[in-house]
Amino acid sequence: MNNKQQTGAAGNLLAQLDKLQRHNRQGSFKTKERYYEAMKRFCRFVSERFNLQKLANISDKHMIAYVEDMQERELAASTIKTELAAIRFWHDKIPEARYKLPSNETLDLEKRTFGGVDRAWTQGEFNRMIALCWKVEREDYAALFTLARYVGLRIHECFRIDTAIAERAVENSEITIKGKGGKIRTVPISKSVEIELKAMLEITDRGHKLFVSDNTKTHLAIKQLQQFIIEHKEQVQEPNSDRPLTFHGLRHFCAAEWYLTLKELGYDDYWARKQVSQWLGHERDDVTKIYLASLMRMEGADV
Image (cartoon, rainbow, N blue to C red; front, side):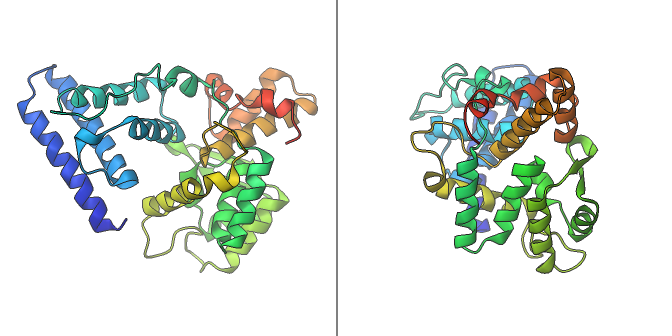
């Protein structure tokens, strides 16, 4: 989908939303304003991801995709619920809406938000994805997946890496990243990551970003990577798996493996989680526990 199509789809949805807003008399001014801004975010998302043209066609697949996107951005559970409440608020006002929207319970939101769902990739899934990247000559994607798998970087953090950051990482065997809220953390890198960074440095002009070309906007480069995962999911994922397969799932895989390694080195449960939390760029222990939902599978299988 090109930029003109995206702008057109988003414009159509926002025009429909504005019409609903003009005729709405329900809710306080603050509630209507908060829900309006939330719905605008959702409209932009479904226009970019699905090229949706009509609010009346919003369905469960749009809600599920939006929840997964918010989880990838690590939004708080309360924020996700508010965003969904806003979508339902406006959806109730759409004349002749075609579908009934799923409830939080149907979305299994509590489990998905608080760590009950195993989101981590298996080693086999990661290996197949890397092989696929090599097959289609996407060395940049292979490097991105490797950074998430072994360094636990968020997708936006990966796309911020420039040649200066990569050169220091290769020299020092650790990478320093500015994460959410401007928090800076340093994470050790493996030989696999070092190899991928060196390969990207060879094809990137000094002073430029490793994964974003000069004529591409960062958010579009991120969308292209996410679409790549969606298009090749069936080739990569384990048979009969119902786990979400997203870039963020590699961060879960990395966190769980870090935790198990630290435990094997003699760290107790608290200090293992604390170290993993630091490498992930978190301060809250309850957030770190979300990343460890895959441990039952990982402890019982050769990963």
